[in-house]
Image (cartoon, rainbow, N blue to C red):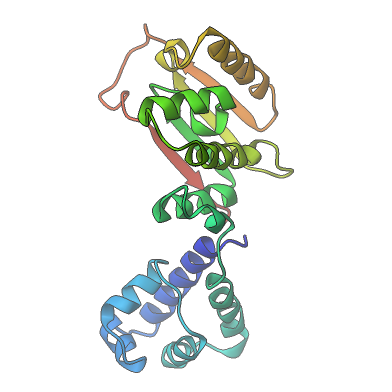
Length: 226
């Protein structure tokens, strides 16, 4: 795993375990690096990075030995790098770029989508039709950037040793017309083609099946080796 979002989360979890193992509070840790306790909280949640000087002070406080400390320093260095999606700052918000980093490093993705085709399964005409519905008159270059993001995101479908992908689509996602008839034909043919890949499972939740309270809400579950 190389993206900074994952590295910060791994470092944060390791520091939290070390702090709790040493019997220290977040306030005590914050005092050592002359910061607020909220800083320690953000680091442990993987929401921000940490300078090596501050990390070394915390490792000394927690009694982490050199053999165990160096991998944590490596995580801190990697956590300060720019993520893969940083070049799309003008196309997608920061929170979604962080999600894309996580999605790219997942070992398994489970996706339930009731109303429209999931983004990673959309063909380009479908993507453009969806954009036209959400934003009737956006600048052409903005639409092109949105399309580029979604198409690049689909690389997880073709990666060697990529994630196992499980999709459950409501029948309404297949029947709801997005764009013209040609767009829908191409989209359904693409779904049929993708479903033949060994790492992809695609199921359809039919109209006549027993429904549930949460059946109208989409969700995604990401699983990671660590």
